[in-house]
Length: 202
Length: 202
Image 1 (tube, one colour):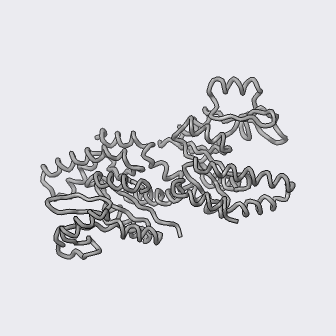
Image 2: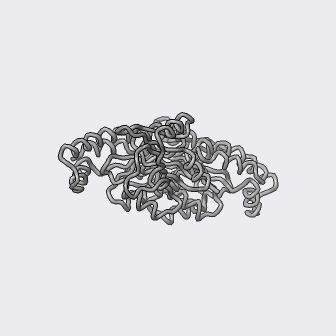
Image 3: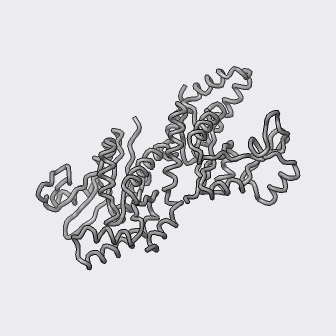
């Protein structure tokens, strides 16, 4: 059994990460989405162990203390983080696991797990990103400007990722990610054992 | 137009490089095979500019002096080398260009062109390689032993390549290479301009 990949997926709000992930997960059941732990209260309809692992502040801090989360951050007084164990279990079972996290979290994971695969999703242009954010029709002008400023800041970090995928169409972006996942299985850094195996096996 | 890739393909004799390349070139007309220059005389049926660029010793040494070959080597008193210009022209036209060369030449190209993609083709095992070499039925026991020794030496260099592909079946190996070529288009190191473009375009 080939071990699965750990994949960090980032990109600015409005780049279309959620739609891409939804399509990718539907298309390839071997791909799993990492589940975050959080100290915030579950919202209506959210299921523990499916949308999040809901934990207390004490539980979260203890997990982090024991080095059990790959990255963590605090928003609005709540902790969010990525527990490592479920990811490793999926990987060992041959699943590729996607961590959908923002660029600060992505940098933490890359430092802890240098062999993770970093993919950054780009909008075709900032203008197109603005159009998409406006089309949602759910945000004030001020909120949109804030998101656009944040997006430009995040895109500066695209260079820290292994791959850059422009979401011009969902179909193209999903295919690109599937290609990357397949190709990465052949990466030299994942195949030192393969080389040894060929030399030593009869 | 996306610029094509420069791909260095190596692997021991008997690993099946020629069959893989033949299938790949047939399947994808965008993939081109680099043509070597040589000072040896053309054999029956060999066409200049198709099988090789046939040049004089003086022409070859002048080309090399001018830095126009990516790698070169001398076998049995003849020079062989890879002229850079035709490769760059193909790449500019959007073609991926494959350089089928041995590991010493591969190392020279990687040093000159760090953004080339290195792929090493492995046999499933040394025993299987031996079986394939014997099945050819064209070589003496001594020649086979020499090839096997050389193969083990070459496989040590697989670690210097970006990707390692086991040729268990031609179909799998060709698909692996096609996946690698597609994925490499999204590699961060080929997309600095893309990132700038998104940030600066309206």
